[in-house]
Image (tube, rainbow, N blue to C red; front, top):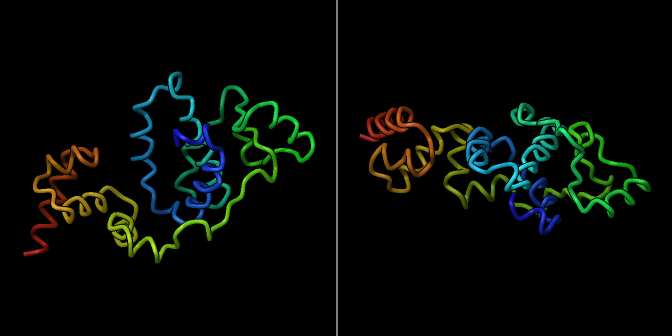
Length: 178
C-alpha cells in the first residue's frame, strides 16, 4: 500500500485482488501491521480505509468496521487532476462517504487481472490454509508449522501473533499429526 501514491494504477489492481480474495484477508493482522506506521510520517496508510470502503461496498463486511471517515477530504490522486475530473464525471459515492475523493470511472477493477481462487490455492500455502480454516490466526500458525517453524516462540515472532494461540495451535497440530 505504501507504493500506491507513486503509482495509482496499483490501487485498481489491489481493489481487483480484494474483490476476489478479500474474504481471506485477516484484516486485524493487516491493521496491526499498519499501526506500526505513523499517520503523519506515512500518509499512505489512509489507503487501508479506502480499501475498506471498497470492500464494504462490495459486501465483504469484515472490512466495514475499518472504514474511517477522514477528518479532512483526502484526494486519492493528485488534487488538480482529481478536481477537474470530478467536475466532469462526479466522484465515486462509496469513497466520498468516507471523505475520499476519486473521480468516477478512474478505477479499473477487473477480476481477470488477478489470480482466481483456484490458481492462488495451488500457488500459495498460506492462502490455501486460509481457504480451508478461514481467515484467522490459526490458518497462519498452521502455515508457519508447515513451513518448518519448530516452536511457538518462533511462530509468534514470524507471524506477529501472541504466544497463547501460537502455543495452543502448535500443540493441537502436533497432536493431530501423530
